[in-house]
Length: 199
Image (cartoon, rainbow, N blue to C red; front, top):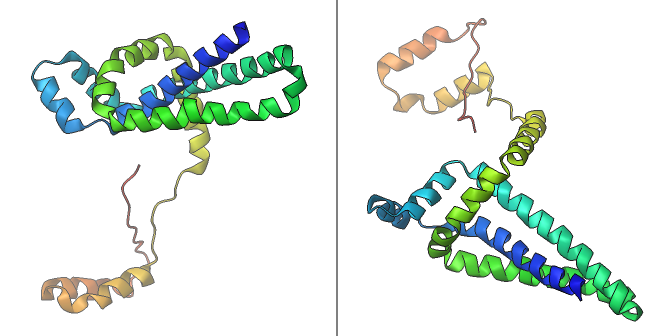
């Protein structure tokens, strides 16, 4: 029966981590700020966590994945050792149970009561952030490395496209700006680029 106990505990932890992610992200910044200004330390801590979401999201991701892996393994071992006659069908019930009690229900409840729950769990998440700091650091660096291969190019436009946009709105521009635009027409050594906000 040890495997079953571990399975239940692992699902509880999975629900905690998956729900905590939703609770902190969905918490009301206005309420948190008012509480923080009144001296509530938990509110200050939640706001601090939300300033750098990558860290606490990584902590929740690590916790969720480890808990899910433990639940899957212990659930499978329980079926194989105690009810092997149902091994072909029993194992298929593990995933629905994990999704229901480890993901769907916790996320629904945590999102509904996001602010009070985020206040209650803030110290735990902060402690785990410190405890798992090396792992969080390595995972974040790995994520940045992978993301570097998918960087968006700058939003460049050709000179012709630029002139086309200006001509389309030309009548709405002041006369002195129209004169400046006309002076640049025909210049071949000018490159126009519109840069979007970098994210």
